[in-house]
Length: 148
Length: 178
Image 1 (cartoon, rainbow over the protein chains, first blue to last red):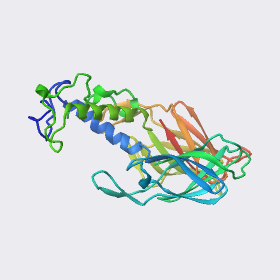
Image 2: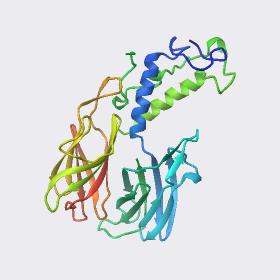
Image 3: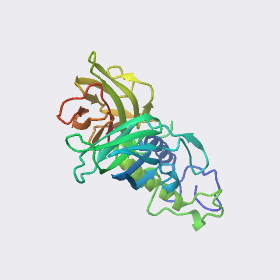
């Protein structure tokens, strides 16, 4: 089965690797797509926290990476920030689901005296990040956070 | 049951051709898309195949969150959530009694846990693929603790330590493996 104007959807599996999409290829797509969706990070955030200013330097989020999707970052005190995600998000087809974060991993960037980082997930959409020196004192710094 | 191409995503062996891409893929008789609402053309399928291949190269195999059980009575770590490529667990389980297909966890000491993964997992079609952790990234979710991870064969040992390198009691962490 070929692709094109004379072959409208539903796309029929079959043919060869040049003109078609075979059932074994389609089956592998389905299995690996599901596998990847289970384990793919929901979001990546890289930010800096200097004095009371938090700057999101890079943000990638499965529903979208534009400014409209960014979490709200709040300065709590030196090195400590609160991050709030929008609790529901829609995909490109307007399918809406609750955002439920269950895992967070973060790493401090080796800038200035900043070495360590801890992160606390308090609700499915709210977490706190604490940047510290090697001796545990809170400090300004830069970090990357991954969410699932 | 249908035959299936290739190996599961965690084997990291798939490329665009596994998913139906082909450098010479063509629309039949060079007839392109007439209506984007009804037609899928060769170019779109090639992009889908390559992008899925790209995602499956770097997607983590799994991410695990847990809480150590150190005081008042030392016990088996409590696993609070697991996302594996093979399935998701969102109900807490004891590290010594994992649901089928999920990693076990054993306490080594205060804030010190070893996770054990199977050497092979199967996908939704029953195709088995070998797994052995090669990347591990651990993070602390307890204030005042930092995390280290060490891979050894099928196990990953994670320690949640304070600034004096002592294990932190009842601490929580998250581990990502690939």
